[in-house]
Length: 332
Ligand code: NAP
Ligand code: GDD
Image: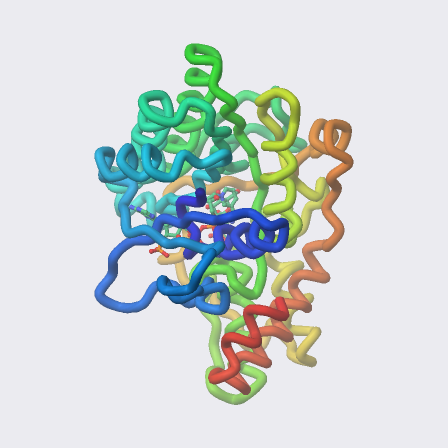
């Protein structure tokens, strides 16, 4: 079962698990517009016999729905990915973020405790929890969150550990550093940059407004990170793992690589707009993935600059052929 199946990671994880032969259950929110674009290529008609992908309406604010669903599905593995995941937005909506990114983890852990204790649980923890703690960050680095989102994720991290210790649940935290892809939400900095680069290349836009260009991030490729999630749940014991490339890049580096891959000069198009600055910034996140590499042999393969080029090309292709969206998702 995957919460957040319609998000970037949920879509790659669903593909990965279906490919392994799993029956996948996904929680989706009812919306007045379609919100399943990232998983439309996986959709199976409800009337299909022996369906492998089954979608259920539900919201992380609804504890009784979560309990009923778990009682019915009895999943072997639960990947809890649903969240209000945008750091800047969490300053505007701190209470909502606390509810959906923080408290909702208690709702699903309680549902497991009550009706599905055998289910293995994966919590989508975040490098944002390290916040102001200097890099390189690893499993023993003290948390110092710098946003309502980071604070909500720290709460969820500790709830996951507490249920593991209190009830013997198989509950694991994956502390993932930033990971991106052509499916990344359009308001995260990498996708904002690559979409703008493609649009500028085609003459559809001339300016790109950004905030802090000096932030340092450890950007990896999302499909590789969902494999790490699965590996963590195949371990003999539940534990907490950092997942990262170990290599740093600035927003400026990412800009340069994206624009240059389309033969563009970013300095001619980018302007700073203070509305994109955060009340408190996380200056540098660079992870040390030694523990997961030792436990599972997982390592990141794609570098931030390769990713910048891949995403810029994908956005160019998408803008040129918007009607081939289905084919597009498959290929990236
Ligand atoms: P994402 O693209 O923003 O996807 C978030 C998912 O959560 C979407 O499916 C969204 O549904 C769902 N969701 C939001 N509020 C919900 C609610 N109230 N009830 C049910 N579902 C709800 O995020 P992502 O990048 O795939 O990240 C997946 C998880 O990993 C998140 O928890 C994120 O915080 C965490 N994480 C991400 C990164 C990263 O770099 N990507 C790093 C560390 C941790 P809709 O499609 O309907 O909006
Ligand atoms: N979004 C955005 N928009 N960020 C900008 C911009 C802009 O216009 N200009 C500069 N930045 C800077 C931000 O200030 C931040 O330092 C950096 O680019 C990355 O911002 P995001 O792409 O929004 O990601 P994030 O690092 O804040 O959060 C992401 O990674 C976390 C893991 O560390 C999200 O995916 C979180 O959900 C995830 O937990």
